[in-house]
Length: 243
Image 1 (cartoon, rainbow, N blue to C red):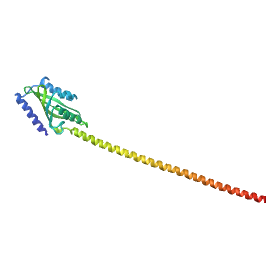
Image 2 (image 1 turned 30 degrees about the vertical axis):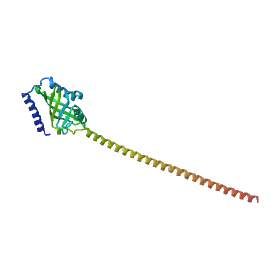
Image 3 (image 1 turned 60 degrees about the horizontal axis):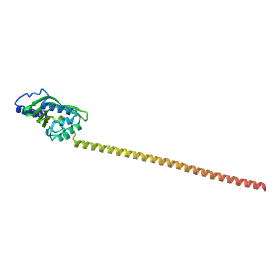
């Protein structure tokens, strides 16, 4: 949504509140009443007290937001959806996320509070950003029954929904499995090479031993033959001498 469109829509919402109560400058000097509830809810959200934030919402609250990359999408029905979608998306997308109020307009007669402020956050990849926004809280008794949020959703980083997170986890799992497979194949290849080297070394040793044994046997045979020839020569010499 373009910045001009955000301002126009927020301005229309504020004008409607002013017209309903018939004044141009509603006062919000203290934290009593609905202003105090909204202020406390936003503070709780910024401090990570999500239960405290949700306690300010009616169980059947209607939640309207700009959609796009804004956490939670365009429309949520009920406190549980706000918790699962808006809070869930914000928790997956950002390491810190909150709305800093700068000015409150209290339309007390109509049980509505308009809040001007800034969304301030740091994304999961460490990118910090700030974006102006307006919130309109409509009350039923002491709980907000309708919350409208106006801001430029295009300025927000990619919203990590539950589905996107699941896809990322599956992709990371696939990459891990591929790496483990490659490591296992490398280990098997290294093991095969080692076994091949052992077999070669063993064969070399066997060949050496076999050759050594053959050489020993050959020497033994040669020595035996030589000894036999010597004995035979001696016998002949002795016979001649006797003759």
